[in-house]
Length: 185
Image 1 (cartoon, rainbow, N blue to C red):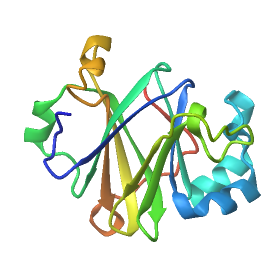
Image 2 (tube, helix red, strand yellow):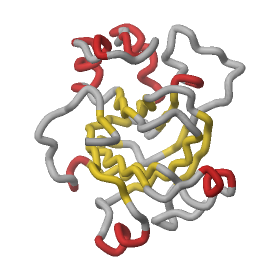
Image 3 (cartoon, one colour):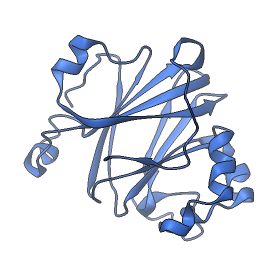
């Protein structure tokens, strides 16, 4: 898969819902204990106090997608994209940012078809992504990459999502911690 940064990690999986989730893998029990209803499905009533609670703690990032489809993603660690990196790919606005705490560096990225946090999780489904990153607190910048046709995705030529994890100490502060990040304005 063509990546923006040579040291990035990539993953690909099918997603049959309009939300993908990024979370600290070892926080599954803590997230399930709070039980945000968005884990079972997505509607306006699922943006509630429980989702705010796990978002504020950096346990879970929920990102609304434009459509359900194949997810091809790149995860990069470090500074936000440089101007040169931005020119290398066409990015749909807006870039969304969220806080994510990964104390042991185990990052899970999953959709509804493979969400281990879901009360309806089927272990026979195709898995999402489980990646090892340096432990720490991050500001995640979510970039939707344009120009990924279905043919390109089948050829795995480039990711359709780029997640840049910038260490909290190096990142521009977040004005607020949103419970759901939208892939469109």
